Length: 119
Image (cartoon, rainbow, N blue to C red; front, side, top):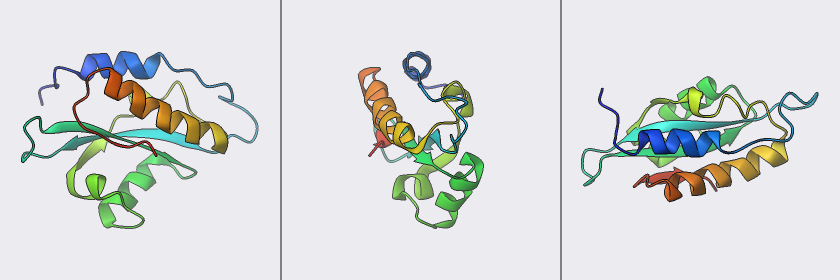
């Protein structure tokens, strides 16, 4: 699969963020990024940013199965991109929430044309 032109900028943007609670005793949350593909869009590739107290692989499977799913991930989710955020996880809940929004904003600033999630 060819990488979208903006992917390397998105990776650099994600790696520019730092967490303060990585490895903390009670850190049981994670942020995760999903590659999206919607062929009906002018630029079909995008990213979804989420946070969870579950294993990100399990959470992705839940999205795809329709359980508490983001419509974007359920319909257009291709796969997780764990390498983008492995330096951030695990996190405490409050920081996962903050970084979810921060990642989405960084991706938009890096030129990702379609960013979902990041509430």
